[in-house]
Image (cartoon, rainbow, N blue to C red):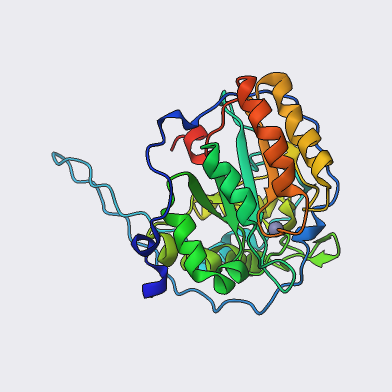
Length: 308
Ligand SMILES: [Zn+2]
């Protein structure tokens, strides 16, 4: 567990007061390829034991007792959601956050893991740190397994907020629908495993549970999105596809990310990747960000734009 101690890797920047920037709003869902996110899943996590706390009855004349909250157990999720049939499937379904009410833009970068997805784009992180631009990093369980020290370092860096990108990197479905050729989770129990398998890893890593979840490929059905919310996480999609699954060349990345300047970035959630250093993502952001900052676009981590 020592390698997961955030305090062992405190190399992040200090003093973050000026890090929020402003935004711009052009939306435009560039749906092209989140395929870099498209790697085959590995073995499923072991089922999680039931950990639900029993609510404490409030007694007359006493202050209310707030019970410790715990997510529902796997069996509770299966019992509650197995009978429900999804009516939506995609990147923007009921219950999934794709945009915020904030005046800031949110940059999100995924690390999908797997044989072709477990590297780290250090030049990209260097640019974010140099410009003091905060970001939310969605990390998959396979990526964490391949990079435990780096994951702990990122968890300890206040410039970044870590989100849950799933245990096996699967589209989140209750009936096995697939996206980009990747089979989705097959039922409510597998949805639970995909979320909570990585949640447990990240709790150990960060010392606290992530608030946000992005499914592998960012595809959900509405029942799976409801399960995510029931487990205490906010399912997240995006409004701007910054790097096309890390397939865009740098000029295209710069152009897509640069679109948020039109509305000062307000409320936009931009998706890109920080696990494909051979792609054009880092260079594209290095080109786009100085101009966005000059134009008054401000940035914040997702958790700063969605208060509890
Ligand atoms: Zn991914």
